[in-house]
Length: 324
Image 1 (cartoon, rainbow, N blue to C red):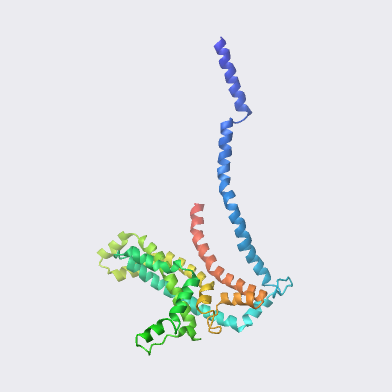
Image 2 (tube, helix red, strand yellow):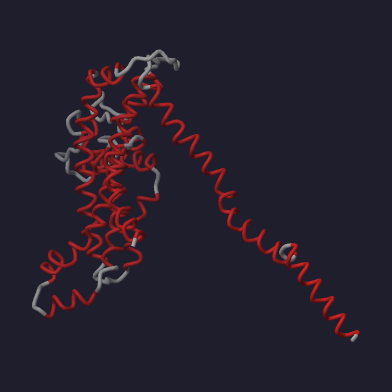
C-alpha cells in the first residue's frame, strides 16, 4: 500500500511539472536552437549596415547631388536635369563615350575570343597544363595600376619595344601608339585584354570540363570531326559562360579608371578619356560636383542596364522551380 501511494505521488508530481511548462533541459535546447538561428544574422549585421551606408547610401547621395546645383561644395538647390545637360554638352564627354564604345567592344570581343582559344587549348589535356593555367591567370592577380605601369614602360618609344628593336638594328621599327592621339586608346585595349584574357579562359575551361563527354563520343562515332563538334555540340552548351563573361567584362570596361590613369593619364590630351576619368576629373579637380555626380549616375545606369536583365534571367528559373 505504501509503495502504491509513493508511485501515485510521483505520477502526480510529473503531471504537475508537465502542466506547468517545459523541463529546464527542453528550455535550454529551445533557446540554443533560437540562438543558432539568429547568430548568422548577428554576425552579418555589421557588414550589411556598412554596405547599406557606404554603397547604397552613397549611391542615393550621388543621385541627389546630380539633380542639384552643387559645384565645389554640396548644396540642395534643385536644378532638375541641368547637370545632365551640361555633361552631354561638354566635348570631353563625347570623346569619353566614343572611346568607351571602342574600348568596351574590342575588350569584350578579344577577351572572349582569346579566352575561349586558350581554354580549348588547355582542354586537350596537354602537358604542363597546370603551369600554363597559372601563367595565363597570373595577369589577373596584378592590380590595374601595376598592369598600366608595366605596359607604359613596354610601349614607351624611348624605353620599351621600339628601343629594343632599334638596339637590335631594326631602326625602321616604330610603335608609338601610346603618344598618338588616334591610336592611344588601342594601347589601353592591349593592356586590358592581356590582363583579363586568362580570367575568361578559366571561366570557359570550367564550362568545357562540365560538358558531358558522352555527347562528344557519340558525335565522334557518327563521324563528326573536332571542329564540327566544337561548333555544333560544345560551344552551344557554353552559352551561360558567354553571358556571364560578357556581363563581367562590360562591367569592368565601364568602370575602368586605374588602368587608364596609370597607362596614359587619359592622354595624350583627352584622347583616352573614359566616363570614369571624366567623372573623377570634374568631381575632384575641377570642382564640378554636380556634373561629376551626373556622369557617375549615368555610368551606374549603364551597368544596371546590363546587370538587371542578367540577374533577372538567372533568378527566374530558380523562382519557377521553387514554386513547384
